[in-house]
Length: 121
Image (tube, helix red, strand yellow):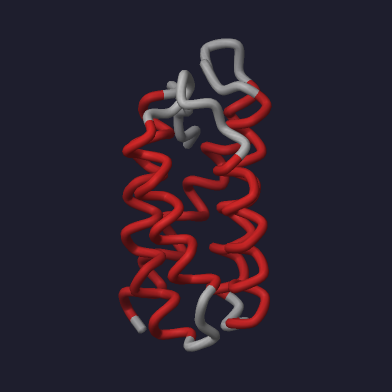
């Protein structure tokens, strides 16, 4: 439970980070912005304990990932995102979804850094 609360706190901060994606200092394209939006859909569903909604949100995330050009995000990173999101969309076991979300969120944090998406206090 503490881990879930920590994740919720972290992604609340990342939610602020998403809002800053529109800053002129950000290198995020509309595709990347849409990807972060879909990611937050998964996060919010898991935080609310809605496994069915998390699976649906993960499916939407997968569609966004599949629309990203390899020139923007490397093929390896895209495959890592697809693997984690696919595992979340394939189950309605909230515990399994949360465990896979840990890795997905770590990969998204790397993308946030690469696209200069910063967390505002």
